[in-house]
Length: 215
Image (cartoon, rainbow, N blue to C red; front, side, top):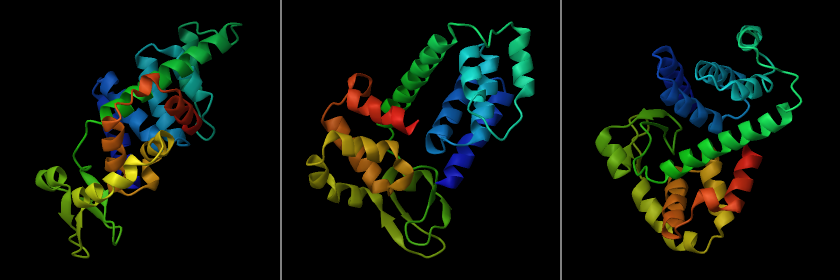
């Protein structure tokens, strides 16, 4: 999972350097979803928001950063007369949190349609990092080149279908939100059951509450 986070982070930084702010935001938000305590991810996401002139989001992020000097970002905010002491700041932060939550919800909704395995994963048996071919990703079936064990994620996913039909919504949400703690077959089985139940994350208060707690 760590290698996946690093790839998302690197992709986000590269997209930022290419001036592709919307795409950089998506990658860095996804990385932050998996590592909510990372100052480095927050700092680079703050830079993206600064470029997009989303100053409330910029300020919200740098206020959470503990180990990285954010003076340069603060200087840039001061240049645009951002009022750090404005009496309406609390209201702005609430709006910023609301905007961030909506973006996160959209990411999770989009992820339901992703039926392929990630490009880079860790072997379920020996934990070696593996880069999968497109066929392996599509078939959800791969053989680890290090330990030679085969993993058929699709087969394991199907074996979980009946069990997951009996799970409450909140358990399915937890698997999806805390995906780094679960094997891939659990994540795909949870997605399939959420789709079967036709759950709309944007309208589901249980999902939003869990997501807020995770963030």
